[in-house]
Image (cartoon, rainbow, N blue to C red):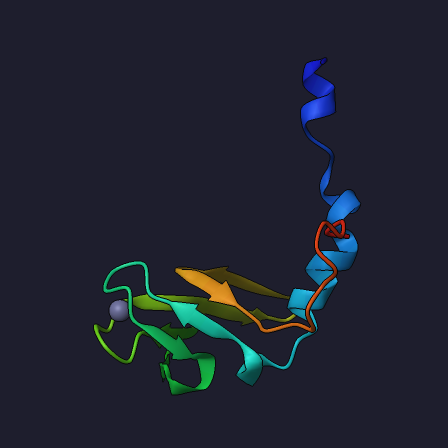
Length: 95
Ligand SMILES: [Zn+2]
């Protein structure tokens, strides 16, 4: 197998990523990278200053950094985020 067969570009998983990024934010859950606590997105604490910082409700570590610039939103997500979906047939391709 050639090295190029081991990966695709991001366009190949565009449909799957769209399922994540168009989801209602409150349906997301996050497992904290520091304390391991799992909480709904809406239960995190949000602080606004030059940008927005969302913090874990248990330990206070950063979950999201967001800056709303005139022409784009710039963000960083930390921890493991999940969203429930309808059960997929076993072996179904993730596309
Ligand atoms: Zn935490």
